[in-house]
Image (cartoon, rainbow, N blue to C red; front, side, top):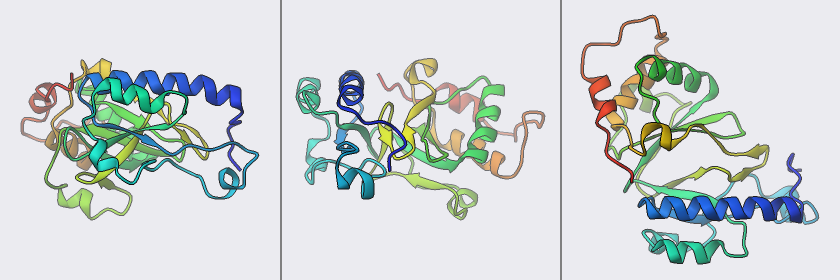
Length: 217
């Protein structure tokens, strides 16, 4: 069963917020798309099949880049989950809670809080510019998943089986810029290797790359 009470009133309130978020992101050029949502606790589908959002329409690829007015119409009257396609404007690296916390601390110490999404299943999403690959250390780790071309990730306040997706670090904290993927990958690799905020960063341009990420506005 869903841990969250998806009553009509609760879904209605979140439907308004989901629509507002979708419109705002669409105006900023993010490729948003509608995702599935729990139909309610009184249905077998919600209790036995639904656990996390996936694209609600088979032609979702063709819907990418729609005008915000069109996006608004999708969410009118329907509390779709909010998804963003990866591989064109942004990518996401999904990690477990432990690695996510370590990497977030490293980013904070460097004064570069990249946009971070937390999912109720204990997984974190680090949003970056588009990349063509992951570093070997991350790619070979089973706990790390790269969302690139042809993929999607959920954004707040989309529902999950265990609760609701939320921001750990909101995009506005980053000035609506996406940090360079290579820089965030480097921080994640350092966190995977056990680096702490007391450790000096490896020589390179990590902080500079984090500071000049592409604008998402």
